[in-house]
Length: 395
Image (cartoon, rainbow, N blue to C red; front, side):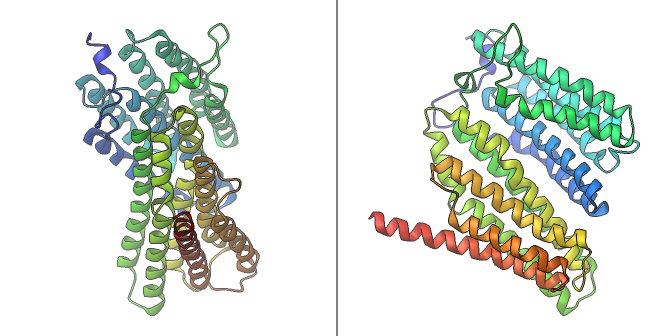
């Protein structure tokens, strides 16, 4: 096996899907990125601010998930791949540090770091697989063409201001978001196929689960740090408990059964590329968004338990709503259910009922936060009992 070929991750062995320590080290950059995103949303809690943060959040997820795809193919324990990840870490820190001012005076730093990560990683991957089968080389060539097209809009947007920057970056992100669904079709080169995306299912499932842990960890950090700065009070203690129980419920809903069942499904699938694209690449962004918005809501309730603005009320509802939507769709896709889980649908209905009541100031922020946490606990308990009942019936 020549040196270039040896950069590929092995397939079929017990450890082939194992997440390496260097990948976990790489993820630390994204702990910082998630923190920056939640703080930016809290500082700009408006429609315009939410749109900007949503764009940056999807970009952060996109650069992370694309890197996870590459390390699914390449072995991060090999020195060249490891050094490549370290270079991406430096760019990722620059990207993360520029998030709060990405739409003011650090737009070029944000866009430049992002383009370097996306294009640079793909060029490196092309070098790493240069002696691999032609279909793998062609796959990365097509991806590079799409990323170069989006790079034009990322850099152009950074040179503009205000709504023009937002519009350019939205086009750039749209180009990248639609590219996998079009199989990276390029004139003259055709398109990739799902067999070209023969991912290691164990690795992909574990990587995405770890990112969910990152987001949940940031939520707990926000809760703890905010509570530590507040004077002791009954409302503050109640808000703290509500936030922690809410985070536990989010963990339970994702990890108690759904993540493990999906992990088993993709690991044993004959078509892991399709599931990795839909369930892990696209749907997980809703799950992560829900956790980030929930962290913002927890801080709002901790600081102002008696009252929240309309934007704050929407955040308190939207966090759990996005999470349940993404989690329900994820479980639906990965379990061949005729419908999404009834527990998640029921939770979404209850949250939508709470929204107009919250906007009418029927509840205080603390009571509303308590009710949304109660909905999450209900969904977790409902699903757990349903699965136990199904297991008993099947036996």
